[in-house]
Amino acid sequence: MRNARPYATDAALCGGSGPCKLAFLPHTPGGRVDKIDQSNADAGCTPGRLVFNGSGDFIRTVRTRADAYFAGRKRRDDPRLYRKAVIILAWFFASYALFLTTETLWVQALLCVSYALAAAAVGFNIFHDAIHGSFSSSQRVNAFVSRLSCCVLGAGRYFWWYKHNVLHHRFTNIFEWDDDIETRGSLRMSPRQPWEPKFKNQHRWFFVLYGLTTLEWVLVKDFAQYFTLRINPYQSIPPLSPREKQEFWICKAIYFAAFIILPFLVMPVGHAIAGLLIFHFTLSLSLAFIFNLAHAIEKTDFPAPSGNPATIEDEWAAHQMRTTANFATDNRLLNWFTGGLNFQIEHHLFPGICHTHYRALRDMVRTTATEFGLPYHNYDTYIGTVRSHFRIMRTLGTEPARAAA
Image 1 (cartoon, rainbow, N blue to C red):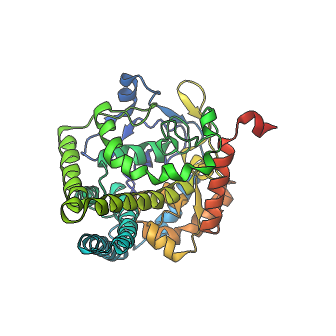
Image 2: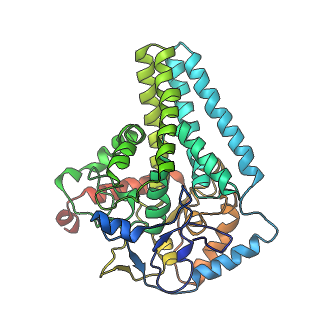
């Protein structure tokens, strides 16, 4: 099932007016179309159908105006992104090669930080666009680039696609549906999540857990999801095809051989362990303090569905405007490094468009949102957004009765 619009996004089924039932998944990594409803029902988890019951012309209007901007322009295959990809890959492999060949511990540590930041840039700019189908107009190229990225990042492509493209982009900030606010009980990331005493003072130590994210991700989480077919306690994962299983093991084998085993073969064990920990702590914080800043902050909403089937009384695009925020969009260095993920509103409305166009679409989206009475959440600075995230983590960690008092 392919969407006829030029955006070809995973969320494009929600582009029209009226209820959005989200029954099918276009553009799966293996090329097949799965019914989530039946998959989740068979697994006995949260019902796999959530209806956005609102209607309106916001998404039609904003896309019509975007079409006017793209007249004569390509939505993908942007030379600016290709040039950036070359620079980032050179940065990544140069940092890693120097890390392997340098003997001084403190220099190795600095190179690990550089190597980790380059890996984050690979994830933000190359992998992220490719997994959304916005790196190239060729789905074969997008698949190849996203597989190559997984070989250097260690991520399971299928599980990231399901977590990010399906659950996060469709069900943004909805507890038990959006996996980006699910930490398997380690942190409280939504006011809809029941409070427990262990969340008290989470604002004092949450960044430590953030710093362990990618290490746990590549060594534990992907394998647990592979064998259990559950993305979290609430949502199951549609079964992998034989080709997707093969891809998972090949990418993992390449990653482990090149980026975990090799350092232990060419340098002292202590240096290799220190490098591994520095790399993953830096990479984890780099990813967490970009992805989490767009949704888990004070301005955004955390809607709760009701009824059976679960229903949000809003249209999908309006829901995205209420649950998503931009930050530091005038910071060109941050925009370059994060692959436009600080333009999160534009990304959620147009995930199938190369991120190099987000800046040009910003004013049009903001004006259209104002016309339709919708919020356009924006933080002027990166530091201001981090502070807002810190404050909401403190609020969420406070016992509800005390917070009310």
